[in-house]
Image (cartoon, rainbow, N blue to C red; front, side, top):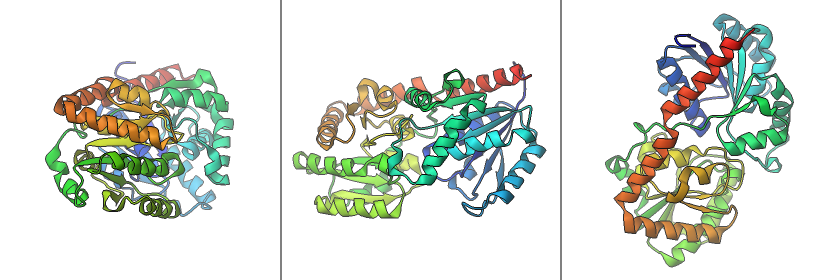
Length: 381
């Protein structure tokens, strides 16, 4: 397998700001740096992470909306014919299913899928999402390899009917050179976010989505401030406007006032993490390997997480793990972590960073994936 150069074609909806999207960029760049010919095709172009690709060819398929199907598929098929991939690699549901539909145009290519979630509660989402999930399960036996970024995601996929003998676990990678402690970089944001007088900042990084459970975070914040009025809270991320509006209204009803900042989506995530003291993951379901936890830890932030996906395994004994949908438990966990940080300070931050980089460095992500793809290509009939 040594020295074999692969032609790898990734397919994803877009490269907007998001955990799965950042992981694809890391992986594509890493494979390209090892000498492979790598392309990324996006349904919708213009995503903020496109500029982070290095040595990777980017194709914008120019999809014009949900019902732009036939012309979109023709453009995609023609692109695959020209590229002649050894590997077709989908990232997330619809892209995964499409790789199977492209087999006639790349009959010798090995098909790989990327799974990023675990047990999703589909009752919170519309019929199009549920149909996509069902199609993905039905088509899964046609993939040669299905890469889950978490043990929880692998087991959830097996329960959904994915063939267990095609499933493999490759955890996400964290780029310690990008996500590094640098409090000066975060200082301008910190001054902005502590204008209400907060001394300790707790951040939730994630879009407003039922999975992320902002309600539990906000109720926990209100409870924690009864004990520690010096705490401030920041919500970073975009999301669905209706749910975001209801979350903001709940924050007002809970009396959080200037102690709660809605920061919106941010492109400079290292600055965000370095403006915070702690990270909170309040998700109710569906997480696989939560990227924000790994990135925050790499910047030296201790994390309080709900026990979803592989979050508990990532933070280990250096963070706090509580049941999902339990504001009191989350508030108590945050207060305990604040106390831990005040007692140990820099030493705790150093251990947190060392833990995540020892276990989940970006080099391991690229090496493990490369080995999988090379082995599949060698076995190709």
